[in-house]
Amino acid sequence: MHSVIIKKAPVRVTADFLHDGLSGTISKSLPFLPSLLLLTLISTTSARVHAQETIQFTAEQVANGEAIYKDTCQICHGNRLSNGQFGTPLRGSFFSNNWKGKSLGELVQNTYEKMPPDNVMSMSMQQYAEVISFILSRNKIEPGDTALEANMDALNQIPLPWQ
Ligand code: HEC
Image (cartoon, rainbow, N blue to C red):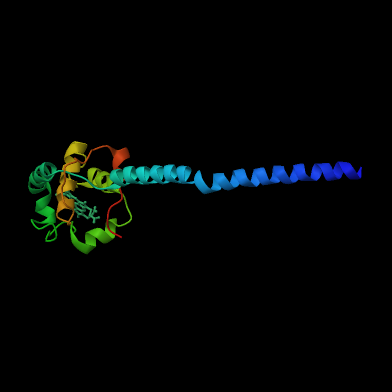
């Protein structure tokens, strides 16, 4: 009995030592690999999400939207978007306070369903996206290379920038 325990003890010590030695090696070298992979995944994913969530429209859309605005909206909202006699300001703090925390999709949808009041839903969604691009450009959002898509699912993912 006694001798069996004595014989087993060194084996157990060796096994424990091996086990510790092995996991020690793993914890010293391998973790860098998974955490690097994880970091890469996280940064790639957030970069992609960020791109989708940014408001993007082109200068051409702004120009088309401006033409629509002059024809259809200016009579009520004014040539400076804030000096309309019959429509609320479409720039500045009144406008941003109304729309902060909401999505670009909500703004486009709302405009599509309510504007112009006597002729709602009278243009294509593309045209509504253009006139909204023009309004956003007059709220200090710069045009870029990527067009604003008139796709409601995509627009609903894009938060308006005001806090
Ligand atoms: C007959 C006058 C009139 C015309 C034309 C008109 N609007 Fe309006 N608009 C209003 C009024 C009044 C409001 C405020 C009441 C409301 O939201 O329904 C408003 C509100 C809005 C709002 C919401 C503003 C906010 O802060 O909530 C947007 C956006 C808008 N108009 C865009 C447009 C666009 C784009 C056009 C042209 C396609 C247009 N409007 C044409 C009268 C007009």
